[in-house]
Image 1: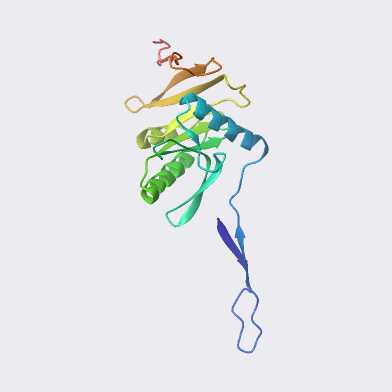
Image 2: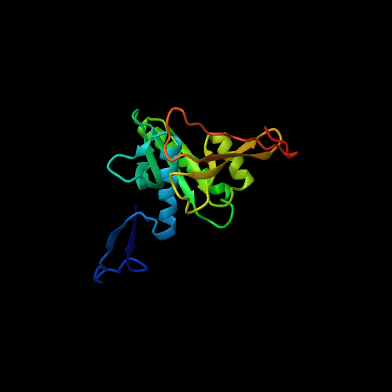
Length: 203
């Protein structure tokens, strides 16, 4: 949330009338259209992927949730919570180009601010439509933030996604493909992960 004002270019001289100052509160921006649809998809994937342990943050739908921390207000694309009161926050980038390193750094900074402000555990995920810059992937690995590539308009309850992993020793990306093909998750369901190495071998 921010403030803006209008005023004269300089203070009035003695004897001149004061210029009225107008202040108005600017509400935090909220996604609409396809951008919001992508946020809803990412929220629903998180809820389904983690077996229902997470739900939308209290009294909200979990979309565009503001928090006050470090003297200002941060609005997260997706916020979920569990029974322990811990938070899962996600940024959802429906961009046609790789997410820059700076966006990952900003999320990491706000997560740390939120942890200090609330004193509770906060985890982070970056959802991208295409990719994330290698520097951003490395920073996410350092900060414990998960990076996920998700196509748009997936027909839930089935979904597919790619979790990007960073190898700090070889500075390469390892793609772990996850695909949920069941309509409901039970204790007997499981995910299968495939590790694809640089030489093309799999395990």
